[in-house]
Image 1 (cartoon, rainbow, N blue to C red):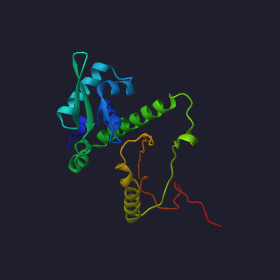
Image 2 (cartoon, rainbow, N blue to C red; image 1 turned 120 degrees about the horizontal axis):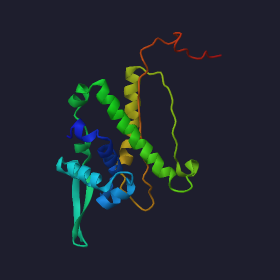
Image 3 (cartoon, one colour; image 1 turned 90 degrees about the vertical axis):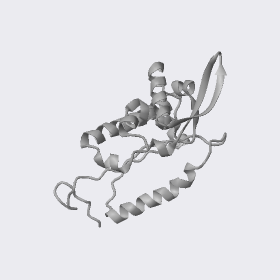
Image 4 (spheres, rainbow, N blue to C red; image 1 turned 90 degrees about the horizontal axis):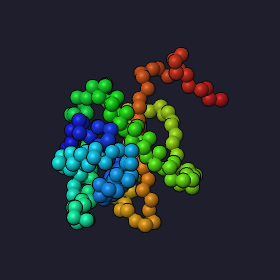
Amino acid sequence: MASADLLLHPVRLRIVQAFLGDRSLTTSQLAAELDDVPVGSLYRHVGLLARAGVLHVAAEQRVRGAVERTYILRTAAAQLDPDEIAAMTPDDHRHAFMAFVAGLLAEADRYLATGRPDPARDGAGYRMAALWLTDAELTELLRDLARIIGPRLANPPAKTRRRRVVAGVILPAPEQQPGSKRERRPRSS
């Protein structure tokens, strides 16, 4: 299990996100994807993640006298311990969320830079909804999502498949009573 200090750094979080989807990448391939990160900095962050066991060397190959390593993500090692999450301060969570959102922005930028993005054709989109849920209903929703997404996480890369980033955020609104002046529900007719 990696620490919050290791994983929640904006560049390292983007590196981890780049490996999602059962990808194996060399540092050169990673540098091409994260082209806004200086190469020296990228190598340093990859080294830290590898030493911590978050990235694993899957292969090595000699290229022009140097050793090129291909890395894979050890997903179990790229997660924070629940006790560490519980010990995070609101400021820690704020910084972690900003790093997460920065990773999403970078993914969106990469998609939009592909030339002529077509969200309808590509199945891309972003939307927000508000649901009124009890704690039990939220638990059921999360279980349903895991049941739908879980099997697809095991899909290996293939020529007929395109890597798609699915990100979810669940934020509870401040505690309010339904129908209060600050939060009115529309009346049903």
